Length: 204
Image (cartoon, rainbow, N blue to C red; front, side):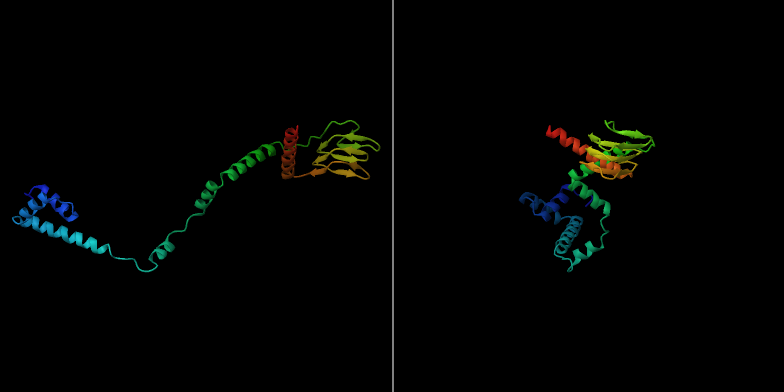
């Protein structure tokens, strides 16, 4: 067969595939009658094709697919997290925005001991104690940092005490009173404050 033209091998493949032309089939048959090597090669190719065709009818045992899948390694949890991120991009973006804003606001947390108070008329400041005297009315919000506030009169607004104490007896406060002593309470205060300012701008 080594001395035979390679075209006869091509004819063999065409014949086994069922794509051979009548002319090539006649040439192949004539050649096989005179060449024992090509006859042997043709038998080997025919046996191979017959084996492949018979193997195509083999079916897997019952529940074979389920058993194979059950033995596969479990999907890593990170893959599930990544899939959740891809399915909820809006929530991921909101979480990233919240984390960035939290870091910025926490950076402004008053971690020093410096005393400060919102400038409002009718307030009396002595040391680190702010007092709204009896009979006086303060119109507007009051924010006291690192100090105490004593309300004996009236406050027409909100009172926020950061790292301090709020004390009152018969006081009248029309707004809310908040005492902030921890970092996350400060963060929540800043978020609410920013939200309220945004609403006020929108309403205007």
